Length: 250
Length: 250
Image (cartoon, rainbow over all chains, first blue to last red):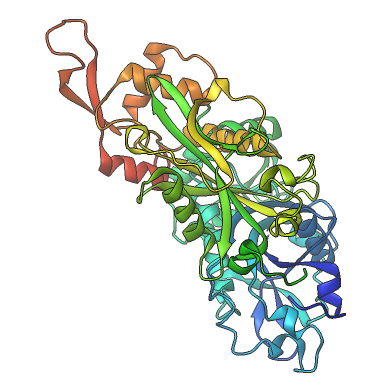
C-alpha cells in the first residue's frame, strides 16, 4: 500500500470494512435501511470502515449512529464476507468516488474483507441519514429490494437466513415491534422473515407456549368487540429464552 | 505500511488473521489442539493469515489441513476479535519471530483483526503438526489448559460458549464421536461442553426424544450383560435438526 495523503488511508484500517443489514418493522412490513450512491444511483447497505482506536463493534455502532441517529441499537455480527472477487462485481470503483482523480480511489480499490452485522431497530425512532458518498438513505420494504451493489444482496440474504434459523430457537421481536402489539402483528413479522404463511391458531398456540408474552387487558382499539388483544413481551422470560433457547437449557 | 521484501508481507493480506479452536473427543475428554511457540514456549491456538486469492474460509481450511493432515474438516466462523489492544498483551512480538532483526517483525507488529473458527474433528484421524514458528502441536484436555497468548483464552471461551448455546437447539457430536458410541459417551461430551453434570435418565429421555439417534442391537463389548448399548446418529434427522432446530421449524 503506497502512502498517500488521502482521507481514508489516514483514518481507517486497510482491507477491513463492515456492512450493516438494518431491519425495521412498520405497517406490517419488514423494512431494510438502504443508501443510494451519489454517482451511479445504485443501492447499497450502509457500511463503513474501522478506525485505529475502534473494535469492529465500536465501528459498527458509530456507523449505525450516523445513519439512524440512534445510540442504543441491538446489533450482532453474523458473518464475514471475504471472497477475493467480491469487489470486482462493481464495474469501476470510480462509481463510488465520482472521479478517477479522487485521492481516495486507490484506497477504495483495494480488497476488502467485510464483517456483516444485522441490527434490529425501532422504525419510528430512526432518522435515516445518507453518508458522504450517498444522496439518499431510506427504508425499503424487504420484498421490494432488487439489485444491490457488490455482494450486498448476498449479505442481506445471509442476514435473513440467520434470523430465520434463530426463529426456531430464540425469541425475536423485542427490538422491532412497539412495546404493545397484536398477535397478528407478531405473526406477520414471523411470516415475513420466514417468507411463508403460518396457520393462525398453530402460531398462537406455539408462541404462547414459550411464556415470553404477557396478554394485556386492553384491545387494539377501544370499543369494538372484535378488536385484537394487545400483548407485550415478558422481558424476564424473553431474556432467559435468548440465553437458553425457547425450550430451555440442559 | 512500508514495502519491504519479507515473506509475510509478500504473501498475506495486512491486518487480517484467523484463529482456530479445534475440538476433538477422546477417552471421555474434550480436547483442544494447541501449538507451542518456539522461542517463548508459550501456548497458542493454531492460526494463520489470508493469501490474496483466498477467502477466509479457504485460508482456515488450509491452516487446518496443515495442522491436522485432514482435508474435510467441519469448521465454522463464530466471532471476529478486533479489540485495538488485543495484540498488546504479548510483551514483545519478537517472542514470535526470535530476533529483532527478523524481516517479518514489522509485519507481525501491526494490528490484526482475527476471525475465529471452531472446528470439530475426529481425534483418531488427526495428525497434529506444528507450524514454522512453533515447536509443538498437541491435544490438550480442555480442563488442563491454562494461559494462552494474546486473547486466545477469550477466543477459546467464546468458542465454548457458542457450542454451549448450540446444544440448546442443534444436535452436536457427529464430527466428534466415533461412528458408534454409547449413551454415557454422548452424555460426557455434553457435560464437558456445558461444564456441569447432567442427570443420566433426563439426558437419555431428552436426547432420544429428538429422533437423531439410532439404537443398535450390539452392545459396547460382546458378552457382558451390563455393557451399554451402542448408538449411531440418524444422519437424515440430524441434518434436519441442524437446519430447523431440535424442535422443528415453524
